[in-house]
Each structure stands twice: as structure tokens, then as C-alpha cells.
Amino acid sequence: MTEEVVLMKGNEAIAHAAIRCGADGYFGYPITPQSEVLETLAELKPWETTGMVVLQAESEVAAINMVYGGAATGKMVMTSSSSPGVSLKQEGISYLAGAELPALIVNVMRGGPGLGTIQPSQADYFQTVKGGGHGDYRLITLAPASVQEMADFVGLAFELAFKYRNPAVILADGVIGQMMEKVTLPAQKPRRTEEELIAQCPWATTGRTKGRKPNIITSLELKPELMEVRNINLQAKYRTIEENEVRFETIQCDDADYLLVAFGSMARIGQKAMEIARAEGIKVGMLRPITLWPFPTQAIQEEAAKVKGILVTELNAGQMIEDVKLAVNGKVNVQHFGRLGGIVPDPDEIVKAIKDKLM
Image (cartoon, rainbow, N blue to C red; front, side, top):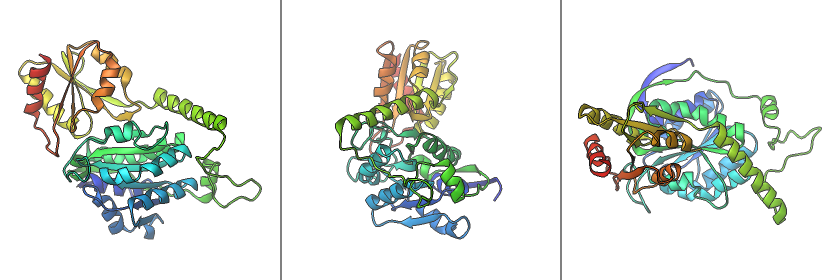
């Protein structure tokens, strides 16, 4: 398969990109609004073309533990779910992080708490960016704002996951997962041979132990002093990721008096709000975090020094705003605008919030 331009949903783009990136396995369980990931993979039958395993597990807990097993052998494996399903996966995600295993986790967020609604939300920011499982760990977190980025971030997430031996998350909201756009799919990559896998992942448990000791994959350490060393090493790795992997986009910030900070679908709505505000003579710019972790703290600090106020817009009650406030350290007025229950605001609401809260 060569590079191809098609019209599809964000969830479908995830599935197509996974096959084309050479993924070895997908283990998941259906839940709205991300079920099209599993459905598309089942329809495409990649086990007949690339050898990719696609399995609907009996539960979300089973799915994440299958990911753990596949990742331990050095395979490119992934899962996808939506908010309540990701809650069920949290123990397994913590185990992946503790064992330093690369894997891709896709979360297409819906509203909560509890069963909540099947409508879009961005209320899993805390769950993902702050670490919803136990222990001091971090997840590399990419926030797509288009169907194209849904496809592009599959390859990027796998690249970062294997580079740092750390789980990576594509944190999308229901709008991006369900919307249809034109997308350019990557050309098909060959899956790695066993020899390539062993060369790239010498830490993996593969069964190919001739001439070397078998690797043991675990996050368990019974001696406290050794567990502390393990955690110190993890924190050092996280600092390296923070130094090298921050990604963000700035839009019309050069002359801005006010700054919007938004990710995912809210960044798309924010761009239209910027146009409306500028047509009214209000100079608004935007900073869109692409990596929610590592967070673009320094970039926000630099932009904050140039503006009169910042409006953080999210489909939640106020989660990313905490990191924005930490970044600016009280040096500029930071306010929040969000909608709850699956309601997606229109751009005029954001313009009104700028006027009411910042001016």
C-alpha cells in the first residue's frame, strides 16, 4: 500500500494507521465513542495481509494485560477504549509504566463521572496526564486536533514509546474520534523480523535465549532501597522526555493581547473564536498543547509575559488550567471556560468569555 488520501472518521484513521505502521497486535473491547477502532480493524482483517493480531478481549482488564504480555516480548501492541474503559485499565497501565514497556493506549473521551454520557468530553486530562493508576509514573500523551493527526500520532506514539520504553497515549475527545475529514494515510511499513526485534529490543523476553540469559520483565522489587533506585531512574527518564519531547502549536500570537490555551476539538473551536474576536478588534492568539505530557510549560510562560490575560478552554470543569496556572505562577490573569455533560460550545461563547473574564 502506498500513501493514500481518503475520507474517514478519526477512529477509523487510528485503525488504518496502526496497520500501516506495522503494528503487531491490537487488544480491545468495544465502548462508545471509540468502537470504530476495533470494528475497522475487524473489517480490514490485517491478520491476512500483515500478520497483525486483532482480538476482542473479554473485558478491558483482559485487554490491557494482553497488551502487557505483547509489549514484554518487544512487539508493537496497542489498545483503545473510552473513559470508563480506561478507568478499568489503570492498574495494567501502571504495571506497563513500572516495567518500562512500550505500548500505545488510545482514549477517545466521553463525559462522566461514572457511566456519564456517550457525548464528547475532555475530562480525562487528570486521569491520563496526572497518572490515574498507582505510583509515581508518567505517560507520554499526544492530543490530536484533526483526523490527520489521529493517523499521524499512531506512528509518533509508537516511536516515542519504544525510544523511551514508556507507554504512550493518544488522548482524543469524542468529536475528533467521530468527525469525518480527508486524511493522508502513510505508506505500509513492513513488520519487523524476529532478528530486527531482538536487535532493537534487547530487553525483551522473546523465547530466543540461546547464548544469553533470558530477560525477566517485572515491576516488582521487594527491597525498598532497590525500589527507590528503580523510581529514581524512572524520574530521570521522565526529565529527559520533558527536555526533548515537548510539542505545541502557536497561532497568531505575535501581536496578541489575549491568549487562548486549548487542545483537541476545543482548539479547533478556539481558532474560529479567534477570527471572530479579531474581526471585532480584539487581538487573540492561541497556544495548542500537542503533548499534554510533557506539558509546554516554558512556551506558556513566554507567551504569558506578552499578554493581558489567558483563557483556558476545555470540555470539562477545569483540569488543564491547573498546569497553565502553575506555568504562569500568578503573573497574569488566567480564567477558565468549559462546557459539561457532552455539550460542545460554539465560538461565540468563547468570544463572550474573553470579554467577560479577561477584559
